[in-house]
Amino acid sequence: MKAIEAIRMGGFEVLPIVEGGKGISVSNGRSSGHWAATGGVGTFSAVNADSYDENGNLISQVYRASTRRERHEELVGYAVRGGIAQARQAYEIAAGRGRIHANILWEMGAAERIVSEVLENARGLIHGLTCGAGMPYRLSEIASKFNVYYYPIVSSARAFNALWKRAYHKAASLLGGVVYEDPWLAGGHNGLSNSEDPNIPEDPFPRVLALRKLMRQFGLSETPIIMAGGVWWLEEWEDWISNRELGPVAFQFGTRPL
Image (cartoon, rainbow, N blue to C red; front, side):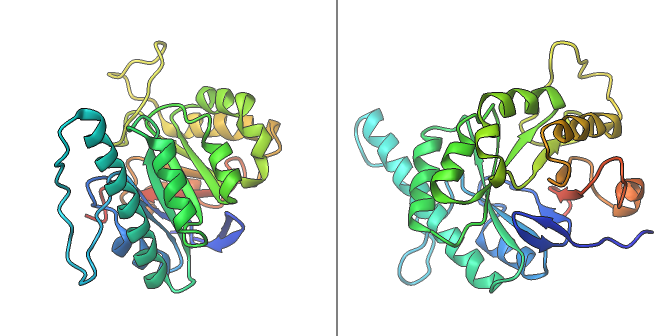
């Protein structure tokens, strides 16, 4: 098998191995911190993340308010405190090695507010934002406000084209990478167009190549593409490693670390 080499992602050299963000505190500060400490990219889930009291005990997320609006505010408070707690833990464990990313779902309640408050209170601890579950047009704007890199999750070149032309071209320097989440192989919030059949899987290589060709048109030839979905053994992806057609590629492991 070919040896993997470090690539430049988010202004920093890392091994092209990325932790896939998984909710309900599966990917957290501990997992992402250790992932980064080995020289890769750790990703903690910032979706209603766990927080702790002064003794390090888990705080139960109990909603005591009487109205829906008030309970929503409680949820936002838990989410913000949890995101900050996980970022701090990850940063301490990583000790300056690798990169720490936070994963958010664009369609979750109060997504923009939560991620903005987490970034405001965890400045310098989070290096990148990974975001999917929708078309996160405003992701680049949030990243620019806090000077962090952003990593949109897409399932086709067409989706990235729409994001780039509407918003991302305004913040090209902070685009750390593009996550290609394969619609047939990945276990996340996947998207298919009406022209694609969920029962007829397509080879990911030509789809990622189409994404790279589009990115080259936008001057993004050295911006990494992160392959997500179906990555178990790197030996199975040997043709992708150091492939000039594809350019810089990293591999995201979602289920495998479990």
